Image (tube, rainbow, N blue to C red; front, top):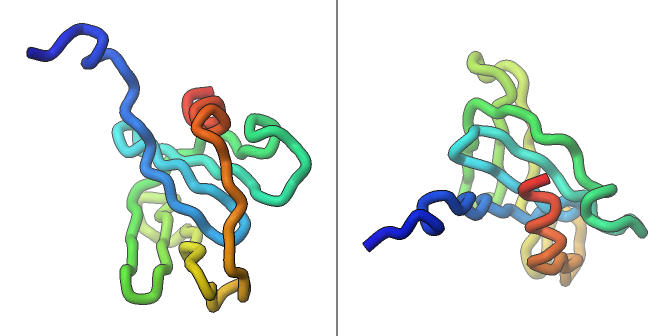
Length: 108
């Protein structure tokens, strides 16, 4: 049985970690935002505004992803997921954000 609370709760965003940002994708509303890493700010002040997107392409082999910023796909952002022994940044670990920080940035 589905209760009213369950249906009105916002869906958790799709979260992708890159070397310098945590990317949040609200797939229901087709919008995204980034939380910048490595800044001495709280997550709300270190995040971008929500922006619309028109597609998200994930490449599991290269760990790259592409965010389409317009319907034609002529404007895009490309990044790579941060992984252990990361070939993009040479780093071993990524900065962590608490669930509360993600929640604050996600639904703000």
